[in-house]
Length: 526
Image (cartoon, rainbow, N blue to C red; front, side, top):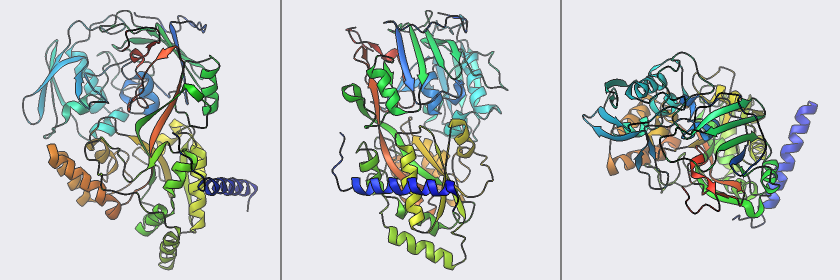
């Protein structure tokens, strides 16, 4: 055994021992600016100081469905035509005043008059059309395209400066909901290159970005809507949750995200349900993972209750599907896959006897800072898989590193497991099924043509028939395909200074609206 492997094995054994001991306890937890024009870091009452777990890889508007991008960009720098209310689930006007269905494929959208971009240019239908074409129909490979639209292209026509039509290639009852994921940028924005620092219509604009150090947004004084309370928002990033929490406790920051219950936020910690589900995605193409018995064994080996209780301190629930309650298609009758390590061992030995190379090394890839206790979670799973006779190594990387394995085309690097978090911000299972259940889905590790047809059929339905069709898909996928070992529906924790009035909601993990944050002594809060 190599020294590195010995160290890793020691760590996993210690983590497993901690988990086993903890299970015997009851652990329930409860105006236009010029970039680089002003780099003052002095704290004042008009500056909102936020510390994130990682630096955004970009602020590109067409990648806002990536959590690390959307949490800064979406509805702060850029804005969509319409926006889903995370509490009511209703689709509400933003840059569009109205949208009307004119056929089973086409919708006519009326824009709000008098909107300008932060550089002073007017926002018109030509800009909206360009933004849609750029995000969905270009060769940029935008994350939003894969997450929301898959391979479908849209037909966009400008009727007049405040009117456009958008049509899908086939009947799509939730087209406006899909379009709500497209952030608006000027028609001058490149169609062939990503833009790291976009121009938008939002309440804030980028002032400066010192890579690796600090990102500062300044209030857009030409904003068409209500002026935000704060004049500036400064972002920093620290990978350790305890460090982020202490920055708020010590007055160095006003808000810290993605904390765990053990990070020491104390009375400043705010727990809230988010829409993220954590899972291990299993690549189906390479042996031994191409054998469903091996995938079943992985599922039987995961102690979901133990992970939630001991590592997450009860902040979450064991997961049985990839969407959370409240999303159309959620199947309330499903139960988490049972924890049965003996059954897992039997399946591995059965596969071994049939010549499946179950001893092949499998990489388990996770993202640093992906969620609190991510390292320990991977170590517990690694140890469990080792106990049933599998050979799994852990590889931690950053957002850019995991993106290589997360989105098609996948690298051909041998068998691997990818720890993912999926948050269905849209509230409809189509956004999950299209990318994770279709055999060619943007983030799907496999499937069958027959299952693809059922996904298509569910997407064409409405009302209760839509709910039932998607619920049945979530029940059948583990039996017919099984590309996931679900871990937990997550809860979020943030630390918030008493000087800030802000109530997080289920969308906070993906899009944190600065305009919803006000001074605590301000009687008018957003």
